[in-house]
Image (cartoon, rainbow, N blue to C red; front, top):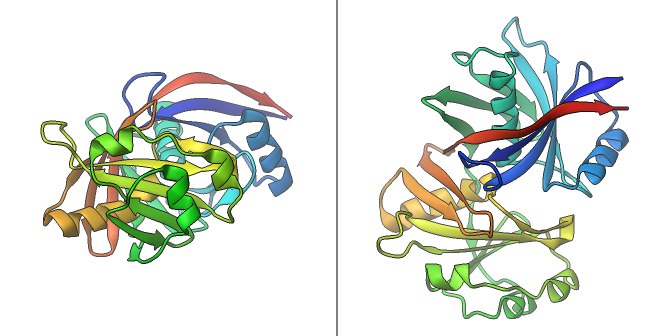
Amino acid sequence: MTIPFFHVDAFTDRPFSGNPAAVCLLDRPADSDWMRQVAAEVRLSETAFVVPIEDGGTPAFGLRWFTPTVEVDLCGHATLASAHVLWESGRLPRKSPARFETRSGWLSAVWQDGWITLDFPALPLTPGPVPAAAVAALGIEPVLTGTCGTRWVVEAESEEVVRSLRPDFERLRGLKGRALIVTAPGAAGSGCDFVTRYFAPWVGVDEDPVTGAAHCALGPFWSARLGRSPLRAYQASPRGGWVRVDSAGGRVRLSGQAVTVIAGTWHE
């Protein structure tokens, strides 16, 4: 069996930046163990598996996401990459929304003027303690700490602090965690409203380049703090990437661009 395979850089308009994702276009559902093996072989932060499904005659797709070690419930950049591939390959007209059935419910994406907008559920960010050892591994003094589900969130003093972070990943791996999000307001003149970095050594990704799901919590958080929406966010990883974030009514619309850097065939 051969499977169309794509390597896409998401949340960017140029290769070798943004967040890379693999997209496999299946013609039928695949075995979970096989998908885990593919993701482990590819070793990108996420590999997406897309399969056509029936939904009352309207084009729709099943979508699952795997890191190199685990399946995840929600992934923004691999969803954006999947929609990009469906439109770019001609499997879906650009005027038609990409609709996905996922572990987080139904998600959709639309294309307009070179930007892809994802409609995702907002995720609550609850102020509260974060393990002291996790903060120590960052080496900063937090302004605020909290949680988003099983993810820890730390607000730093400034964009400069976020950009200069060099976490102690060995120390983090010694803790029982899922992910650590660090965020701060954008510096004056930087062109962004807030910045983010996302560390997840517990799932095989020391630093995720651009994390859509994190912005499902940070979008509403910063919109409430700044008193406005939409916002322009920058994930200040070494690769970097831009996300437009619009929060309203318990939903978050994340907009970004994508570029295909590899298209080929996976042989089973």
